[in-house]
Length: 453
View 1 (cartoon, one colour):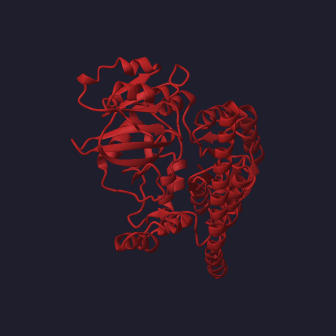
View 2 (cartoon, one colour):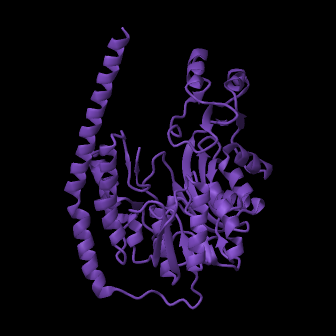
View 3 (tube, rainbow, N blue to C red):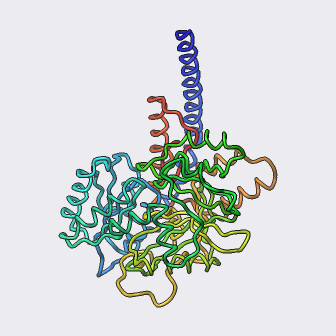
């Protein structure tokens, strides 16, 4: 009986692997078929740029800037923004094939140590700062390096290098969903009902009959796998509730937050803050998997919430908030916060004052710097090409055409086309081939964050 089950499992595994292999080969073929498009676009751009190329702006107060996590689109956007303002930009990344290193806006590129080894990673950043005499370190953190970059900030103080990032204690609060809600509540800001959960029994004994709302469970730490799997509590039956809770790891080491479920419109924001002053702000409509960004300039309720929180918390750094605007009462509620750069920064591609927002020392006279009124929706070419296969009617076709007609490709720049070309023709195909050779299943390709999941 046992051998029969093992044989059955083995066949299922082989079948799953075969499906993965065929699907991955299909993706590779699609990438090959699409590759002439970025190739032609880049060739035409290079020819035109050889005629219209302008030298870098001469800035007598130019600073030496170090930007980390250089493989991401948001890193490239920051590189271009600082370069266009006349600064010397150094890029670092632990991945040696990061295509953004070939941007004409990058003066020097360095390989950093892997952030999984905290000591070596910190030391590698310190070494770069010393070697390049860096004035400002701007970490483009990911979920696992937010606190690590706060430690780097402390390590760089003796080298007269300012880090645009929060202190460790501040970052830990912002990245802890419950602690963040508690802090915002202490400022008398609107927040959803929230409970810290470290034992499933807390939920099983919770009296939902006294509540007028439903709740959802979220890991307090960033959880890419389960972040869209939001089961509403209470479940229809106690048995369903028990089965759901048994599928999760809930304890003191892995705490969760039980948060009020609010029906409404979701928004995401990026803010650059210095000593409590919100200096740069963008707000975009949000989805669980978002690859289009367009600034919404009429959300003063969200802007005022962010300004008040940052001022009262006296924050510094790059902070991304997720909000929901309730359909019931029109109020905005924060869903979570991350102490890192948000990809919505790409909406500033045509704004000349981004560097000033990060480096300026004088307080702004008016509102924080926001995307220009003519800033176009940003998109990623291959993601939109894939969306063509999803067109089912004329409305879908018109919508897709408007994205290409009125939008801006997030990686593409007339003055700097190589990262765009290499991302789609080298980096993404290489990533898919890696998954094929190592038989790593995936369902989606994120053209922005550059990984499969």
